[in-house]
Length: 166
Image (cartoon, rainbow, N blue to C red):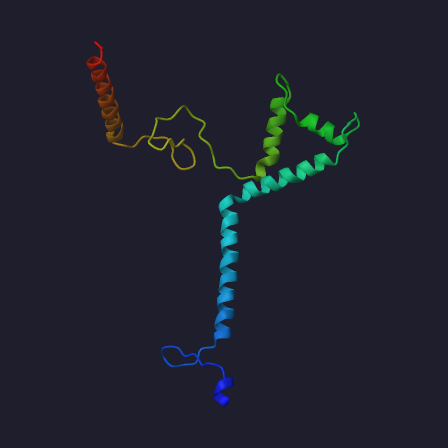
């Protein structure tokens, strides 16, 4: 009579009792943690800067929608927008651009190369932060690419000669 109403005892390989309710709880917690981690990585994968930019665009659109349709001369937002526009032929534009660059100095930028055009390289790396622009190779790459270009030109010329009389 007792065995009819008793619960089934589950055991693992070593013979110890398994607590199924506890195991299900742990699985749910692991799944929730994994889902949270996946969501975080998906957010990172989409790009944090792009997400911020999109949020900023939405806020700007909401702000613009709340403004009246007719805008007058004393509208501060309109005045600010018109002042920030760069116009061609403006003699003060260069000065203002330099001032804005100075204000944005807190954003660290890597040093840029300002010398003459560097020799071409395989990765199109511009001299500066990682490379000083000096070609220290033994010339093998240049010779290889020259041979490849020459071979292609000869093949093209041979093809043109072969179909010339058609």
